[in-house]
Image: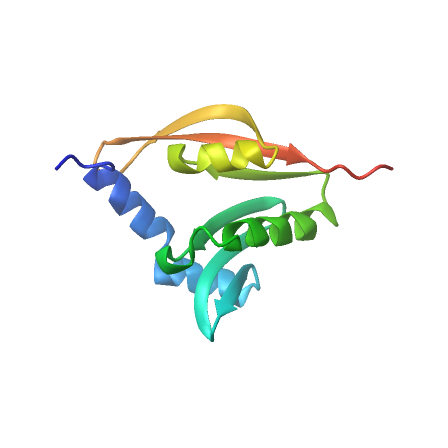
Length: 130
């Protein structure tokens, strides 16, 4: 069985999505949760005009919850900013392009173990008319 993510990449994401980091974002009211039948079905983090940590649990995928969270996040952002931005891994890129996001920069970073993580910065302009 081949591995999709290297050990270094997995360690990077575990650190980025650690309980401490998420708890800090919750304390600053940056994390939003959607519930289904009193269970957490998905989350989105909004930090200024940046969308992050968009998750939908597997049992709730393909039901429009991710789209709902993205619409909610964009509405929040476009109240104050002219564009929304996010960092996309390869699996999410197609969904973001369908939502009107454009790649602004291809990036890479070296993880603590020396593995290289590739991602793309993407953004979407508001459709507000001034």
